[in-house]
Amino acid sequence: MAKKKGELKQTRIPGTSDRIPKAVRDAADAYIKAKRSKAKQLEKMNGCQEVLIELMTKHDIVEIDIDDGEKRLVLEDSSKLSVKKKSDSNPPNADDDEAFT
Image (cartoon, rainbow, N blue to C red; front, side):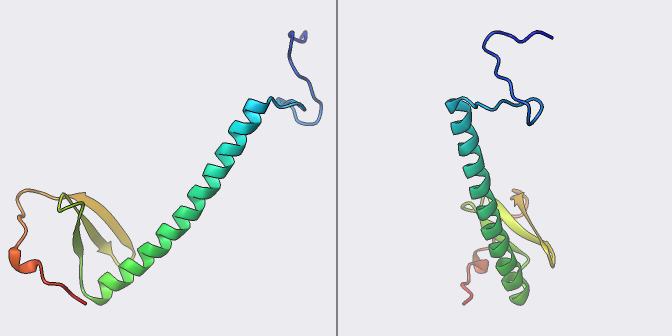
């Protein structure tokens, strides 16, 4: 197959080029930075989830209203949390607004 005009060639890794255009390198760097940031945030979220599950279990709480009561955070079992849309058939009780410390 003939080399196309402007096509870069290298021999180390098939399907790649020795000379990477600056725009491609910048995009790759931005992607890797975002990917690593996401991994750090996921680690932080998992730690917060563990603490929340532990505290909900300790205080015998199985669900919490979130997003101004639009949704609820439900402890499914001893290791799983889920977010569910709050149904209109189960209105909040005014007596349930006690603060626990």
